[in-house]
Image (cartoon, rainbow, N blue to C red):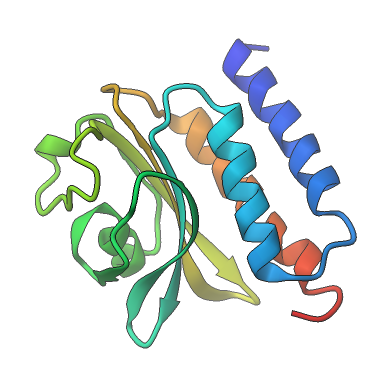
Length: 157
């Protein structure tokens, strides 16, 4: 098992334990954003964006101030909202239409989040380094992001 895989396996366990018995979605997203930001190396931003009224709206995040509204089809997050599939971007400067919310970002991964078979939003991770993210990140983040709903929807929201 690689160091990255081990890190993600631990992150999954920590996320499940941290969010266990918490029923507030905002609290869960806040803690999960913090946990990811502080557990993975080389991040300068970890953000949840909700899909609401036809656009992505910033939710809980960690890092420098982030873009608050992103149009579908615009930038990496908007492209994921449009295509409903993850984007792993080794060099954001080569991504057509990239939105530089933080000019220090050089690579990015965005995974779509679904709830009750409906597109709900995205999880966006940025790095100041090039080539930070790969398919391992995509697989684990796609599994970890929806944990906020598996716990939160068991009770009140």
